Image 1 (tube, helix red, strand yellow):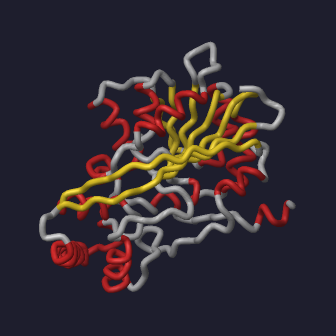
Image 2 (tube, one colour; image 1 turned 90 degrees about the horizontal axis):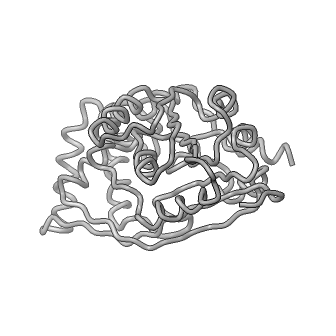
Image 3 (cartoon, helix red, strand yellow; image 1 turned 180 degrees about the vertical axis):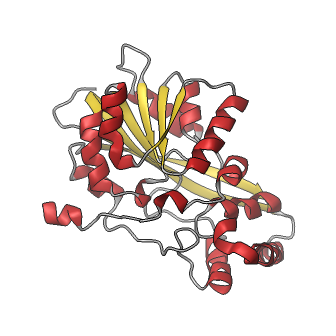
Length: 282
């Protein structure tokens, strides 16, 4: 079993630079998680008798952390990117949210964070688990999450469900301009993790799993969809460099040819995979 778990690990030597240049675009162009996702997560700490303390790993600029803080949670938001954390602090200030503590750390340091601040009622990882050494992170969370607590892996798109219809067009453009559709920032290839998130959770201490899936729709203008590409490690300004302007002009032409009205809509299904320890009660 140990050998199988170790084979699923993902490690990047430049983890802090993967999302270089993505901080401000992330705040501007990434959509919030569907309300049904936030509602479901808020039920996970309903048993807590105090203001719940939630650890958000791979928080980015706080896309999920700030929404959960507005639902009454006290958040420790963790990321390896100083740029993302700076964007998060500014965004929290703009939204008058004070219940978030921002920490520059790797997700595998969750146990050390709990020793510093106390055990957490739960941990969330939103659209970031695939970047992490998942077994090592879950082992650390076993020491960071209190008895009865949870780990929730959130994805804007449930495994095995359709991507946005424009995704193949974007892949072809990235191949044209970068020579690869799968980059992890300016200088590193993306490492495809072995095994699904649910499978990895079931191998961990948090092996009692439940899953929420919820349908929703996303709509973008042409400018928003072009801007959204700046939030991804594989098409960020840092990754494209001096090719960014030409790439975005090509993208505009391609998208406008398909949808001249400038409205781009996709039907998606989000997922929340919640893991708890088998012996715990929630």
